[in-house]
Amino acid sequence: MSSQTAPAHTPDAFEDIRRAVCRRFGANARIDNIVSPTLGGSNRTVVFDLVERNASRRLVSRQETYSAEDSPFLSPTDQFQVMAAAFRHDLAVPEPVFEYDDADEMGHGFVTGFVSGETMPKKIIADPAFAVARSRLAGELGAFAARLNAIPLDEVAFLERIADSVDPVAAQRARYDFYDEPHPGIELGLRWLETHRPPPGKRVLIHGDFRNGNFMVTEKGLSAVLDWECSHIGSGIEDFGWISTRSWRFGSKLPVGGFSERDPLYAGYVAAGGPPVDPDAVHYWEIFGLVRWAIINMMQAHGHVFGGRRSVVFAACGRNTSQIEYDLLMTIAGHYK
Image (cartoon, rainbow, N blue to C red; front, side):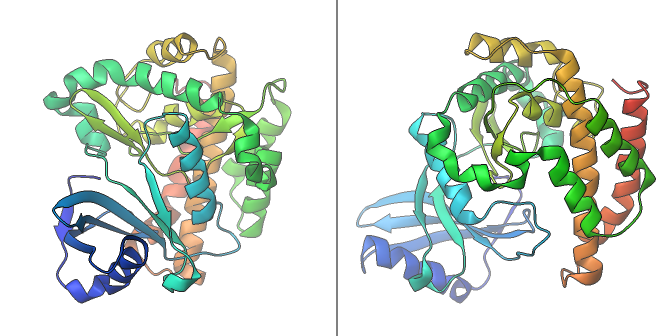
């Protein structure tokens, strides 16, 4: 988890997790050393030690706190299953431990193993302590993506029903239309995507939110890939477009997450068994990523105004939408690389 955590102030606030743990590990099991991360506003996230006799294990609980018909995110159950598939194939993901059920009376969520590392993008990009990690990270992420893409689709067949798996551009168009709010820049971007579709290729499992901020990084390199709520089936290169969008460079001139040029990412992908990477296809998915991110910001602002999710952060997303539209137009025009 991010190093930016705050100590829990009220132990009773975690009685529901205590009960759920005891249901699975016995009445003598207990939780200790509890913290609530300060980031991750769409979920309730709690980090704790599971103590059994003289042994302890660090775990992470994530519970869904908001759902709505306009949400583009997977249910916690689907997220848990995707992570379980990745874990079975020895990918660097937190170990799925258990899923909450109706008897827990906690809503939807799950518990995973804790992975140490840093997630703050600015630190990963600029902190001297991560210099070695930065030199390796793009290649490691490319290899991770190739191995993820190689997971047999019958292990995640439930993702076929996701709109993004059926037609990702149509899925964005439907979400945009839902808000009935005109944004000419997004309209132009959607039209560009519809008229510049690359030839269809092999459909594979992709992460869907593959970006700086969703990677756990140590001083040695990648330790885990987090946040699987956008996973679906599609083009493997879609993840490369997403990590390369200007929004996820955090002010850096380096295109891949703000920490690398593109070639190491592609080389790591091919070395791990992925097909050669077509830069034009990545460019397409980069523009797609900007359209998608602009629409997600529309969603967050709409939730603040109309959906009962009052938050300064979500309100600011309304402003962010126009900033992303500008980046989108500049990228389509060829001014941004």
